[in-house]
Image (tube, rainbow, N blue to C red; front, side, top):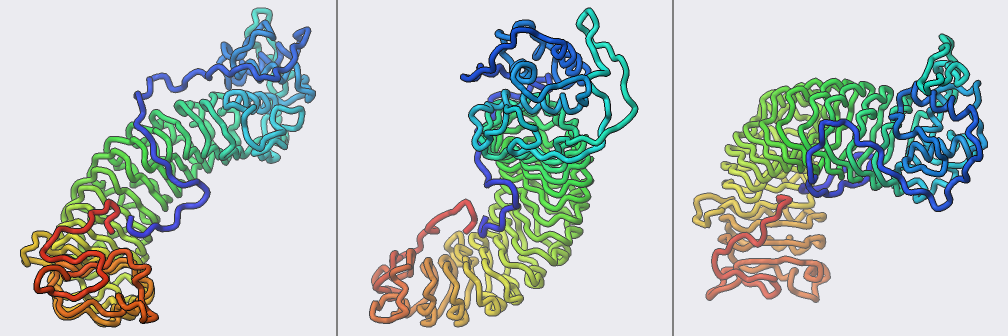
Length: 569
């Protein structure tokens, strides 16, 4: 987009992805991948004491593992992360589990070790205390909180002679224990599939696993983390569908998924996430339509679903998202008009809907209510009609990009009158009339691109009148692109005082005289030729329409636009 806005905090920058090779199967979870035996494997215990039976019964009772993944009889023939985790607890861990150990703590330590062996733990960076005989609450990236939990202990469980679990007695009492509430392991070289044992951390509020090498599909058990508030999985290699069961995570406030290979439809279960503030799912392979149910996400402030493969009209129900501040839906195939209900988005500050196939017109009734709007990018669509005068009434507007549409008529004369405008791009339309006087108030403007408004080069459209003298007061201006219009008169000499200018294009107009000498005379202190990357004018042909001794391009006759940039500039 024309001017990058501040990226949302916490998660890293976006990364592109390749299309997933296949669709997810009906089975919700892949079985944990086999983990190679570590080079420094724990030494085998000569005997299997009663703790083995008790722990086996504990895990069966908890349901966090498929018994086939952790049951074993030969301590030297282990090939699953679950078995390696049990081996550690039974043979190498000096923190002994006994009949007084709370069930939830036994499951917690086992599940952390299963994560360690499932996700390439021996190659993690900056995690030396993992898989040691220390309190797991001191391991890097693990935060524990004193929490009221069920008081069931290992001593209340045992195994029957058949080896199947028999529940002896369960306590009704509760106890305060240090329970894992945050797992924060970003950029630690994690690799592999998230194991089903993630379900053991039912009290976790934060799961930060971004910028690693996670693969495979999300286990269905992740949707059982009822206390989860922040889920950061971006910049991995995860794939498959996001289940509608995401709606079970009713405490979610922030989700970042971008930089993976997720595919399929956006889950309708999102509508149940009444506390969700941000949903970031950019640049992946989501397909289908925008769910009408998204209008029920009453707390949503930031929605980033750009650069997917969505094919849809914008549902009018999205106009119910009155808390929305940042909406980015560009780079999808979105057809139809902007819903009239978008007039309800009174808190909108950033709106990127460029490079879609939207049509119709932008109306004053909708735009006028966007009183907080600062950054508006709608280039590369099929919008027709006039630019709403209401844009000139928006006091906070800094960036407006309406390039590459079918807009006609005059640019509103009050546009920029707030004094806050930093970038105005309306190139490649069919606009007419003079350059708006309201721009004179925006003395800090950085970018003005009014070019190519006579796309047929036949004089039937294009801005006319003279280049205003007040352009010479824009000391921060870097880009001024005016080519491809019907501008007349001489080029103001004051433009040569703009030492920040990098691009300046005048060609394909009806200008006369000369390019001000300040651009070409090296003896003039304000000379900007050394920084000027693109200076063009109608200085070719015989006779020349414009005299210019230092132009990068001298045009003798009408030529096409110099470039056609995908970002609308």
